[in-house]
Length: 392
Image (cartoon, rainbow, N blue to C red; front, side, top):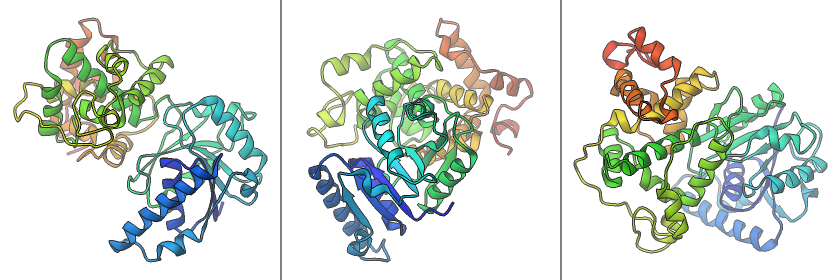
């Protein structure tokens, strides 16, 4: 299907960002929201963003030319000729189902109906409008104009041609699409993010390390741009715990007991947006990189163990491959290299040793997946052996 006209529902940060990048790539774009206050604010932010990119030489067209392709409305009637509509409203199932019913009633029969949800199962949304085979997950990362990753998640009803069209659109928008073979709560990025949060919390609450030592190891030993407590502050502890609850309550991931996050939320210490979370910031909304110790006793094989186990689980289930996972973490989380490559460099035998030791203490989530155990039995322990998730 040739996509020429794109619709966006929701003029918030994600919605107007997706609209902006779509207009930049030449699409006719229509944005719908419930009030002109939201729409006018979105328009101002889009113009401001485009002017910044233009001043740096990043645009071939002037901002006003790009904005001439964007229309705004409080009515879904504007979607009558749209080929592809993306929903980007808050994470509320009833709201999303209501929005999709309105989209369905106002779009042509060929239109792809995509959701930018980061946590709600796509099939549950599709079932709200009669198990539509045109509904698909298209999960952009924030900010959409900058971040390259798009997770493409089919529901159990989605037609293959709809998946193909969504992947093609992501590529046209100059994104890196990662196509899941089937849906799973939290998709790829958020499931691995959860596992890093859980192991960081376990180490601190077990008095194995301080939060500063955990984050120092991730930054200075593993090479990540942020430690996990720092990243959770940046994302928002309330948002992070919401994702945590959605994934665990789905039954698709064993939980790891953790009190720290709940205590912070109870104290309204939500991270950067409140000015204080695990670290203290200059003022609400102002991020400043926390100072961390140069040395840390935290072993990279231990702090990465649960996340690598989760990646291995996703591979074993045939949902994605190692390269897909690495693309998610590089293009969605700014990892310097892929997580499964990092695992190969650390040594899969060392990772499994840590998993088994923690599992023996009663943490069900740490049971090594069969794929990892089988790889070690075959001598595929990573870079040192010449073969792991990649060949060397």
